[in-house]
Image 1 (cartoon, each protein chain N blue to C red):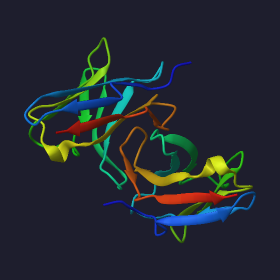
Image 2: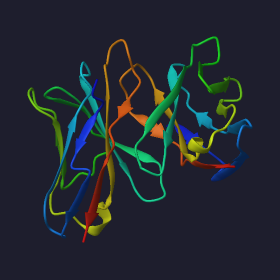
Image 3: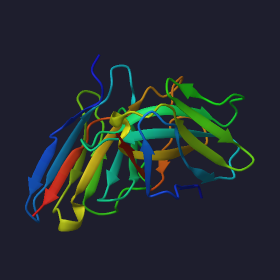
Image 4: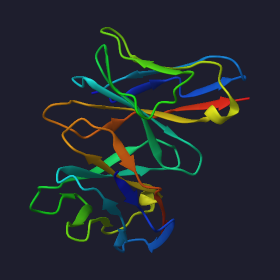
Length: 114
Length: 115
């Protein structure tokens, strides 16, 4: 009974490179959320997706960040041309949607930009 | 706009005693949900307990209970019989509106259980 899976757990990038973070939701869950946690802070919502649809991206920076949840495969959070301020923990959560609203979180990906 | 406030940056409790972690919220939407998550030093986010705005009774899950006072807009987490493994950061979060919406998190409370 696997929970939410995220990989990689740790990612190191140099400024200007691209970062790709993956998230596989819990079995039976069709809703995926991405959150960012800066050091010493709470989590901040970024984007909410269902299969092949972005439902709410109000927390996503306008530039360099994108997310997708294709019909097949994991959800991807992509950060282009990373900067030092992108260093953070990125958490993915999933929920079943209708009939269940609790969001279950993955272990997170710690991104460090050098 | 919705807001979650946790006013206790850090709390200490003696092992086997009960502790209350405070959380107040602000929203004008009558439909909302309140959540508590635990984040140990290893970093993962663990779901603890949920309370819906229309729930008549306070939620309980094992040693965790949620003291929901709707008029005061508070949703305090009570941990009974604290254990050393309870030492962690605790976050209160709120979801506003229908199901499947973003969560708004508080700034967290660092709980330390003393032997």
